[in-house]
Length: 94
Length: 207
Image (cartoon, rainbow over all chains, first blue to last red):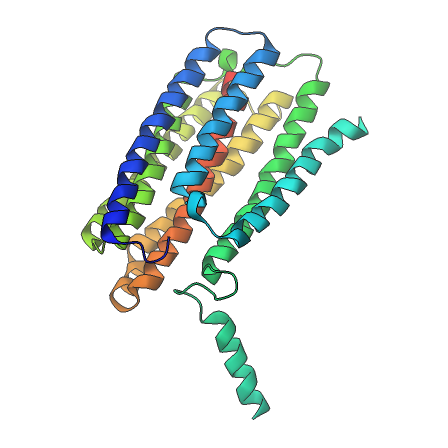
């Protein structure tokens, strides 16, 4: 995001507003779905899918990952691998 | 001579505070912030992992909506999302050299963070009134640990942002680029705190 021009930032601001609207709408949707009382398995899938979508929007646009350098992705990939191992450990060991 | 060259190499390493480092392509501060956030992923990841293990191993588990206040938490989710937008707007204001707007957006971010904490305080107060404590059962132990740790992160973010709104903003006059870099890093942290809540909300309240 270094040395972005004035016009570029103005374009970013429009994207930020659009992302905000999407995040608010997804929040309402995930709450609405919870009132449908889906079976637990389906409810977990829907809730996590919506949460992942919201998290991706925040990370890509607010945290500028969409235009970030390779080194940041290397750090995050390492964290992601260990995160998956962490979640998988209890499953494997039980 | 030797001492002098050592100092020079140290300076070479730490001088990329406002300009991207030629090897990494990002400022040292940004790389450091992302490394810190990666360690935070592991911190919350461990607790999420514990939650999954405790829930799947429990004979019965309450639906969050039956014992927690979903409308209040939905409101708080919207508060935190809005604060993420005002945070990124405060950085964008600096990038456009509009310092007055930076202060407005940063002030709003802090107020929204405080609003989140007040609402959370009401929620906690209500639980304590009904004698629901971390020791009550496994659900409440998980609920208080996860929301409490997240709440501490919000407190940390509010303190950091307050520093950058008042004394820390003096740097804008002397080193504007470095100051904008600091706000971008503070923003990365704040968005991460929002991101954690995005997962906590459905996991604890809706499932």
